[in-house]
Amino acid sequence: MKETINVNVGGQGFTLDKDAYERLSEYLSDVRSRLTESVDEVMTDIESRMAEIFREGLPSSLMVVSLRMVEGAISRMGRPEEFGPRTTPSEEEHRGASDTSSPRPLRRIRKGRVLAGVCGGLAKYLELDPSLVRVLMLIFVVCFGLSVWFYIILWIVIPEQDDKEDSSESFKHFNKGCQR
Image (cartoon, rainbow, N blue to C red; front, top):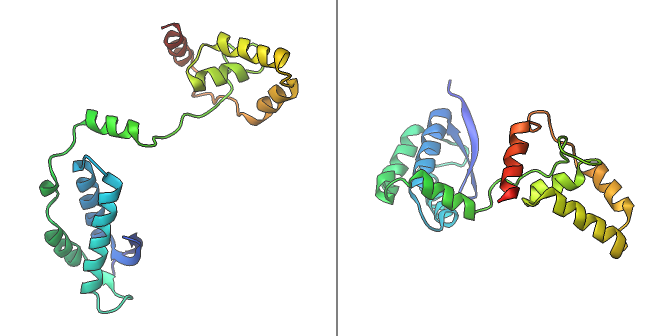
């Protein structure tokens, strides 16, 4: 008895053997690593074509896609090497930087804070000097009528930095970046 996995390939639902799923995942990630432009669009097209090939080979939608069917689809689509050479890590980093990468968390800082760490956390998030953010906050409170309640709400809403994030080394690194 084989383990099966329900997956969505090209917007269509399929049930795959575990080994077929692993092979398909390896193939798609290998192809993705070789693409340089319009990665998401091309991957959507590849997955859609794979889904068409699977539908051609399945007499019923209740059938399971086997490793043999995945290998057959891969041979029809082409080996990953045919999509080009693997991109170097610097190209992937560059491509990842232009895409939406994982966002930095907004946290109140623990070390180096004056009151609650809100301004320091905002400064770290915005990659600014903490003193500048504190002065700007004071100017907004005094000149533009920004309420102290706003600061208190930020104090409540913004979570405090975790212990693992709260290292003096990371704060020193942050301060070095602000001094440039």
